[in-house]
Length: 423
Ligand code: GCU
Image 1: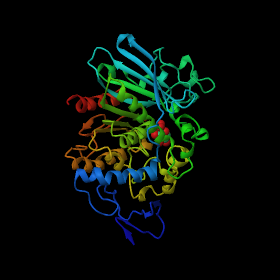
Image 2: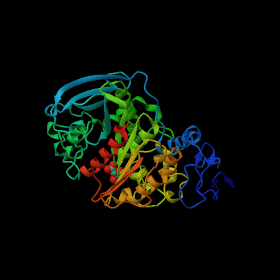
Image 3: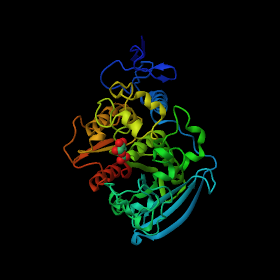
Image 4: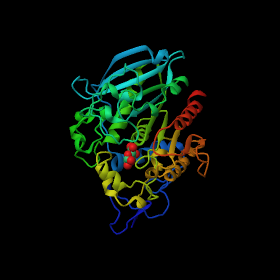
């Protein structure tokens, strides 16, 4: 029996999607342009009106989980403005987002650096950080994060010796500044906007769904399409976007969302679910991000769902050990960003993220860009190491391991200059 492009394989691979049976019958990647009823999408309009919503619903229900809308009672409080920050280079602003308008409810601290001496409004890059707003710069004016902060001596990216009782201390300032080249970003005329992942949602399985914005949505977890951590981060990015739309120093139509690794997974999903993000920069987002599952390389669905049970929807567990048989795949997530610019970056030694799988995924998303008359990824073969290829989809594979380096940023900024400044 066959339903659209899916066929029944003796009950082996079916999962519930609004009563549909999903079982992949063909080898090769699912074609993003084929609707669930088997019909082919041939115009950008049809993609936008029919296929895009269908795919978003599929990824929402089966992979990422569902998120609430914009909170009605949300308020913003600008609690800091300093026009002489970073030696006069920038204006620092800090804004508390109160999700339900209550000071004792969930609070997300947003840190903004706006370049001085340039014409405003400016384009912006917004990205979540791993270790607190205070970690991206030694600037003493940044409010220390008050949310949980992991401790430990062996983190390869930061020295967390500064952490006491899982809280930041003064000594934690700038511990991750290496990954945030603020000067270059500001010199190029971009604002940098960031917030701490733990302000939004717990990244610790033991406290999952009990901190951050989840506190405002207790009923959203006991369902198969629950509001998990990755989705909560993406949703939180949209709340920051809500603020950026009213801050007149920022051009709300030129905001790129950036993320590395798990935060890159969230950045991609934020770009999909919120079309106000004009571009997406995904650095080594890997499994559940840019990489294809279908290749069966790198981190598997089983690992994602067991080591990080709080990240995705409960429904995703139905696909454990079926990576190579999925009836959908992550190139369709990238395709959902079309026709907006998206940059996918990989690192050679980052095997868990399967660099080839990230490249192939970007390539396979291009058909949808072409539907819009855009070029997608303008190369069929992976570019030489440390070189960048840039169409409406950009890509590079750099030497080294899982990290964010100056080379990554150099290409991200070049890509944004092309797409944001030539307008
Ligand atoms: C782990 C995880 C990855 C994730 C990474 C990170 O390695 O397996 O999926 O991207 O952490 O966020 O640093």
